[in-house]
Length: 214
Image 1 (spheres, rainbow, N blue to C red):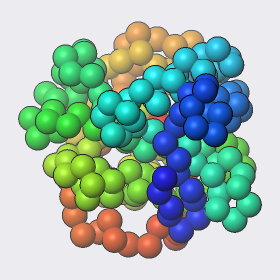
Image 2 (cartoon, one colour):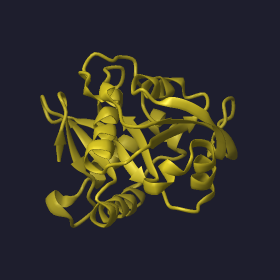
Image 3 (cartoon, rainbow, N blue to C red):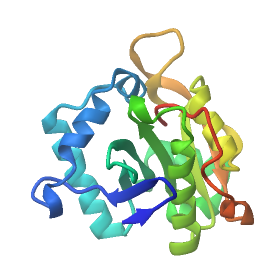
C-alpha cells in the first residue's frame, strides 16, 4: 500500500485474495459511462473478477501493476491507476518502443488512471500519476515511463503534461475515434514519455481539471 496526501493506493487483488479483493469497486468504476466510453466497455462482475485476478497475479509476478485508490479522508472509492508492465513484442509495445527508444523497452512501464465521477476535477489523477512515477523511478529504478490515450482525450493528456511527460508521437490501436460511437481497430493514440527528475518532489494537491481516464 502507498499513501499520497489525499489517497490510499492498494494493489488490486482478485476474488479470494486478502480482504476479499476489489471486484465490486472495479464494477462500480467501469460501470461509469464516462469511464466505460474510454475503455470500450462496462465491466460485468465476471469481467471485473477476471481482470482483478490478472492484476493480482501481475503484482505477485512483477511487483508492479495498477492500484485501487480510496480517499483517505472518508474511505470513498476514487478510482484506479498506477503502472502496468506491457507485454514485450505486442504490436502496441513495439510501436511505442519505436517512438520512445530502447530505454523504455527495458521495463515497458505504462502509467494510467481512471476516476469515478465524484473524484474528477480535483487533481486526483495527477496525484495517482505522480505516485506511479515515484514508484517507477525510486523503487523500480526505471529509466522511462510512458502514458498513452486517444488523441482527443484532452483531459487525460493535460494530466500527462502536468506530470512532466513529453509528447513523443502517435500510434494506432483499438480505441475510440472522435466523432464515432464505436470502438475502432485503428484509433489514433498520443504517446507521452518521461524519465526521472527532481520535479516529482512537488506537492501533488494543487493541480486541477483532470478527468476520468487514460
